[in-house]
Length: 119
Image 1 (tube, rainbow, N blue to C red):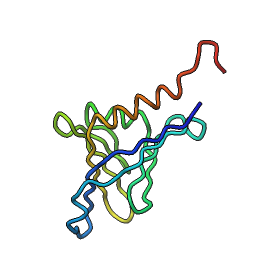
Image 2: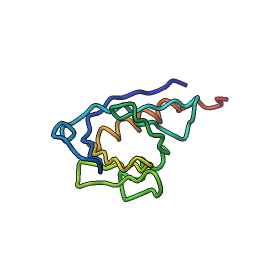
Image 3: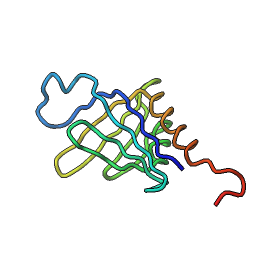
């Protein structure tokens, strides 16, 4: 099985003091490695912040609010989705285009598809 990596543009908002550049779209790296953890994806934010998110939670959150604790996901309008990350340093809210997350999720399922009679 092969790993999947996809870059997406997102808007990041934190509860820290904001500067104008933080309101602009930033590159985010979405990663999935089925050999490392077939049930999770990683979301890499600028500044070396990386979060592990259950793949099923990300998928559920594109349709309806999902999650509790450190990670929450919900649809925002017709074309966007929000992923909210909680840590001891604060809260980061990341707004994605839903189609970018859907494209990434489809690629993760393709990466884990096994032929009949596999392993």
